[in-house]
Image 1: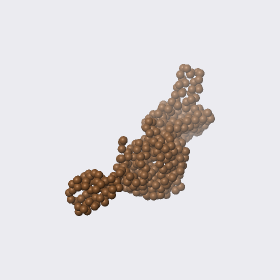
Image 2: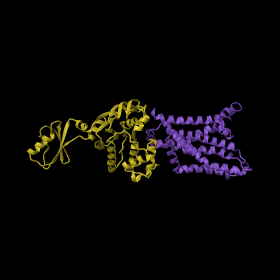
Image 3: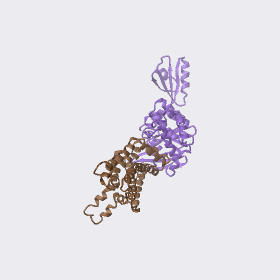
Image 4: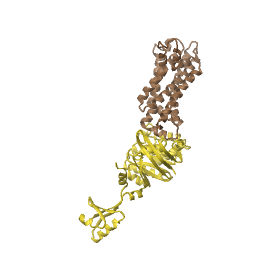
Length: 302
Length: 243
């Protein structure tokens, strides 16, 4: 077990930032940590990296307790804090050497070289961190988090504020690292979570509201099946209503959205109906409820 | 710890403030010692470095807080303290690394003044007519005094994420501990009764005692306990996020 969290509670003044949170992450898993702002993601990550202690509950990372074995724990964990704080006056290479000295690496020169290669900082290595663009700073942040080859990587919003190209590069870096290491990363971006990881933990107001495989999560979210249909000919809503088992029909742009009860094989029914009337189908698909819908459903103000 | 130490030294020497602080110290000292006729040793007609050791504490009072003000304030401001605190380093090692870097810089700033010692030594009539023991004692006292100011400065810096606040706080605490007891002892109620006891709480009392060239363990213990106290407080402040 790479990360084990049990009944974790953290209280800031009156507010419960974390409320009896429990989950565990196996070795080699890549897990996305989702939640609206202020849900407790960063607090949880700060506890897992031994920056602050919990008020109650236990947490173990890489086999070490966050409170009693924090020094050993910090040797095994790589952490990218939120907003990626860095020493802007330092040069990229100088900074990575500094971090490798803290970790007392055996071959710092070689390791810094490697990290610069992996994160693609080669052209920037002799620049000051302060003069780098956001994407490159993020790479420096990742490089310092991974330089000691940690067992567990904890990344707090590693892709916040990046442009689409930088996004995909950073994502590739994370998935690459996640091949044989445990990664827990937080994000607001659902597609990203979908792209990188297999499992997602959704947290809201300090409580875990979902913890599941992404595919399962998107299937179980509600009890309806939505089929999207576009045909060349003009048809009336009433005609569509006549398809067996249709509950509801909506128009959206030039296409229709037909709502069926789940398990009623909606796509099949629509296809039969189209065949019978020999219409020309331009588009027919079963609409999966996206992670975004689930996210909104689970974290909406109640 | 040495990683932090090294980083601090490099950061100081690669920024303009580092050279500025050292130059200001040396320029002020040089002017007072050799140029301004009221204080110039050349007009004084005695081979002594007393000027150096009388003036340096007052320059230190402002310059050392200027060096220390960024040590922790900057880390809090930029959020890099989170980066540092989640690395395999104890809070005390972080404090000690930063502190020792400041002390090294103070010593570094003092090194060129050895040239003054040599000049006076050489100018003496006959040559070498200077109380060498007192000079070394004074240097020792000055380093201890600077090290104490540095501990106060590092502590002040850990109290605020604002460098100006850290600077002012350091100046005030340093001043109070350096001179206020001397002035306090002159209050009529203390006069001729316990004024010497009150004075002995102040740093200047122990500094003056060391300047005589006699290294007394009481003075040493006084400075070392002040340094330990402030470093301990800094560590407590740093760990207070865990409360």
